[in-house]
Image (cartoon, rainbow, N blue to C red; front, side, top):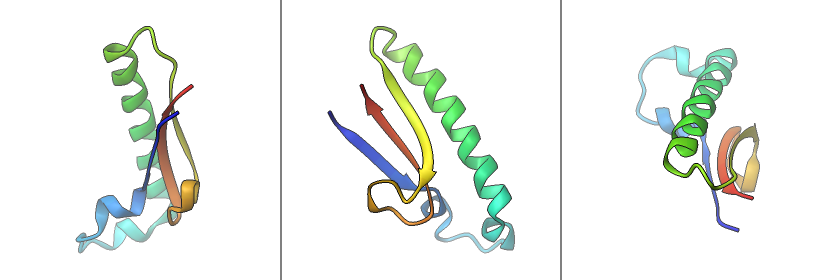
Length: 71
């Protein structure tokens, strides 16, 4: 199994807007990423079981994290 994980806050490392520090906005961003990545992966790999998961500190990442793996 191959796993990728990213801290959602890392998408905004150079952001100057204070909204990136609002937990609710980061959570909603995570839901959007999860939804579209899952749809795209099903489109590209229809025969594979690929999961896009959102959670806290997955695989040692900081804060809310998105991970993608094949079951």
